[in-house]
Length: 296
Length: 333
Image 1 (tube, each protein chain N blue to C red):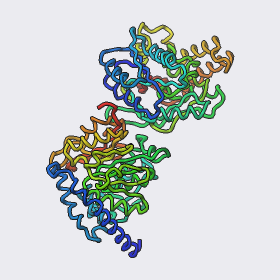
Image 2: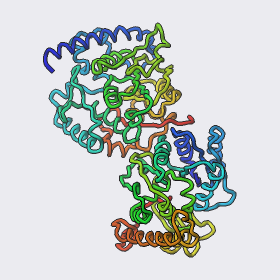
Image 3: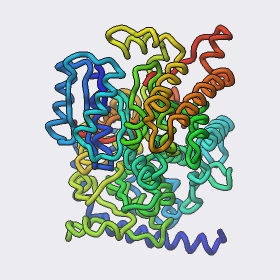
């Protein structure tokens, strides 16, 4: 849990996680906005539940840095743990969430990410999401990244349960705009995605998508120039660097294939923006307001 | 159903009534002290008092005597007003559009079941209330835990006349369903359920050997106990607590005691149909403050979701506007 100043709902979130029917897990919290209130809440649970670990960052890392740190600490503390999930400090999880997601990963070695349908929590309302996306049964990496670039639900999938090794190979979170999308595209090269057709995650919805706010949140020391490039170009750059230049996809796939996948991602992400009727690109062209989308 | 079947069914129901009455008559001595009853509770219990000496004809129409418990009156359905019919038709259409036809359980015709005849079954206001609760549990991904395979689950309903228990057990046969409450209410629910589930296994709390009540719960379908025993329940497990307009008739301390007992026994969920705000004290007690203390409100039980997906809008004419509360268990209270 990369925490950031949500003492108002933190206890509810932690209790939903500690109420999981699947008991063999640890909750690692790295706090990027430590305060006496937040630490008192988490310490209270940590005293009672030995699987709760709390660490306050001495320096603000920003959102990407904190998401990376929580993954790294979890890997250090529990190197034998096969699965990993990021959880927010404000959403609510159904008690069977972990049990159902782990069952999917246990049953299918080709699946690297399992996530459920979600319910959008709004003040005094709740809406169930109907959208579906998965790549189960698609064995071709090219076909998976193509389909992911066009149709994936990054804001939902990023909170799914993942194979930790595959996530590590995919590069965890990168310092780019929409890093959730970037890592999920990379992850699609390492396996399939399965959506569990049950609403097991309740997602708080407060604000819309805002690039400026992302830059502020991701880069506390100031946004680098490349962060002003279109996000697909940033993602193309990181994928090309990781898989075509550094060869991080080996032994699964080589550098040339890595370059091809990065190019496929770029092309199909652009196609998505052009084709999707509600894409921010289309709406910006039409002069409409940018639709609301939650940042990870 | 032929006339002969009806006569046979009535005879059986009356025999069951005598059996149940014999089992639970002693609960009257264990009842909550009369001064602990609230005004609304006294009204209900006094309206049901005649049931202790019911004739076979009254028992054969048992369902039509549940009016004091749920407020749903059979006479309203003999020749339903156009406005009532239109409202219920609209609500059932919306519920079925949102929900799942396979979860729809109509009002049984047995024991004087009544309602609007549609969808191949009878239905009335109670039927829709229970269907809403079922859909709420389904939408919250709770129902699957009771319908699916896995260990046998236990449900505790506080009061009621047996209508929700009938719907729930029809959908989730692999559950042990415990009902506690005033003996007058148990007289209704036990006879009703024994008539509708003739092959089910029933157990009544026996003051002579109280410990036996809590053993081997996997082997029974329905268990009945007075309120005082329910508050000291030693169920081996509890998965869901249900209140459909029963708690609201109690004092706030008894409401809190029930909710706390469910929480102490580890009930992961608590579902309640109860007043939505601060009701007139002469009509009902507030229930949500006690629920809130022990259970987090489930994200799905918001007023707009209930009004939209479950067609559950509090009606202005209702003396006690009600809502549906689904809570999941707090780890700290």
